[in-house]
Length: 282
Image (tube, rainbow, N blue to C red; front, side):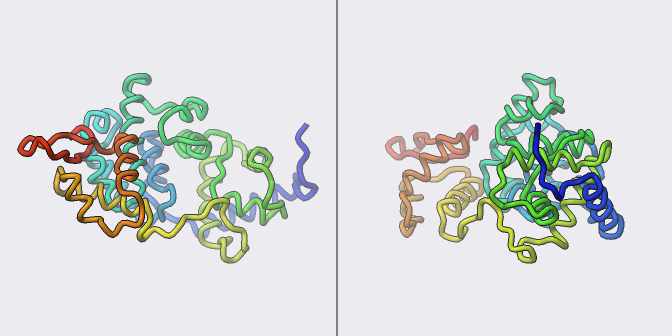
């Protein structure tokens, strides 16, 4: 039997639900992904929203769905087209995994994004949170998804220890979800955590914190990908010269991009002795 904190009484849960929904009725934010229940569109928004502010995602999300309105369109498009639209959102590997997801969904599920968290979790780039958030926002699935905002709210509102295990927090999150209102509940929590109960206000820090971006390995990875999108190909020697000031092992960064399937090394048609780098599948 699961043991809950003493503060987690039925009365406390009801008061908590009322507090969150009262706030939501007066302060609900408007985003295009909240106007659809299409599972593919929700999947795109959830991947885009990972470690990216919602306001920055809006134009990218709209442009993406205009270019790739469904799984079949994305699966049949070259990876480079997906990376071009993704440029500026960061973490280009997320675009790669979405592209791979679409191919798998076409092959195994006839182009329909699965509704089961257990199945979704087997797809590239979809973890514990996203495997639940997709069916929550698309299908109103009666379960709980915990991101940084929701974790902070639960810890603060029910005086939980910040060291509480993920499984224990999941049990609590599921207990407080209002039956048949999972979609609105999670949207309400997102807004409350973003607008009112912030990390700065509570002092509750995320479990993981992003390192400085400028000059990081991720920064150089992004620069190389952007160069290849704009130029289609670059000599490896040219890349080495251009990023000679890179404090990291540039060969290691390039080999990482190759291993992930973002780029590939080829011989130049005009200079067979000189290898070039291109976006995978270009």
